[in-house]
Length: 506
Image 1 (cartoon, helix red, strand yellow):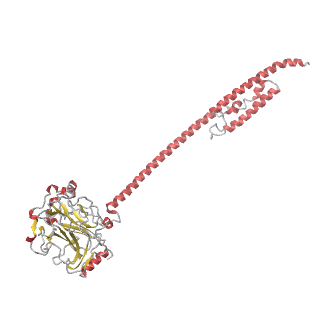
Image 2 (spheres, rainbow, N blue to C red):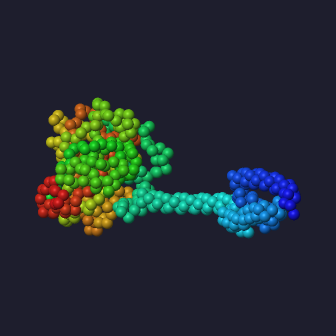
Image 3 (cartoon, rainbow, N blue to C red):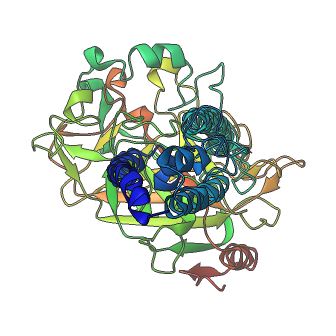
């Protein structure tokens, strides 16, 4: 058979095959473009899946095989090879790619069966759920953290409260390291500067100011008119030896009294002269006094104080201050010319050393309000010391004013202080003897001398309503000498010696 017939019959076929190949090429280009767009959009199918139909709903790459396409393309071997080999191979690769890219749920690209686009969207939904779960877990964790923080804060506040309670307890005297001071609840009987009416004091912290007035003419006496007696009042009867300490004449002033009005500024409502411990004020206690410096030449840290004497013709620095002019105490403060602090023997028995931190007061700062109870005021003039009076003496020319401050010296042997500041100490009898159940300790006498202003132009400071009554003279003392000093002092007295400024080591 001539070959021409075949040639005639194959021309349309080759044309159709060429057109089909062109169409296939255009289809591949279009599919590749769509696949690229899908990749950028994150659908997870990829180019191979698009070429193999991996994005079909049933996910099957087998049913869309290139067999049909090859058949459609014609029976030419080259075309069949091209269709079958190309698309079939791509189909296998697409299946592998589908299996590889969508083989699990961890990466969110598909399900475990390797499904394509729709399953990818299901994967995205799972991602959303996982993200939501993580957010909820984080919220729960934050809530737990918040609850834990609140619990920690509550615990911290509880701990702080316990610490504050413990600290407040220590401040209120529960600290084991504090001294066993008497917690003075004001006694029923008002003794001296001790205030017996705390409610009234709270309403009027500085009572009596409206009653302030100067001393009257009856409060003064010419020393020449005083009968010689040698002594009046209690104490002042001595025997055997003594020891003295030089602490100066006036170290500092204030209107406090830490013994009678602890912690209260202007608790005395009159100004005190202090010698010895230089830190004494309203807030003084054992610790502060033990750490304080002293004006005593031998290092004795004891504190001694008494009301100041004023020259009424002068003007003091406290004319408009508490304890001064506001409480009726006016005039220039007179500094003593001398201040002798003497500890003496008394009676028939030997004295025992004075215990550390023994607190003693003498006189009564509220004598007028208390019917002259516990009065022990003693005044005289130099050169006429045998004439002693409880009024302000008007001394002769060249004579100086003298004050004797005699302290009780019979100790109960147990208490360093008591609520009323008195009942642990009493005065000896007229012969200087203590009761048999009491312990005799050295008798402190403070002797103060002043250059006296002319006439009746002087007086001691007082509570305003006491109106500078001379019988309100008083003094306070706390022993902070070392044990060695106190022992050596008692030994001097009992041996009949006259000792002075015993060193701290005795």
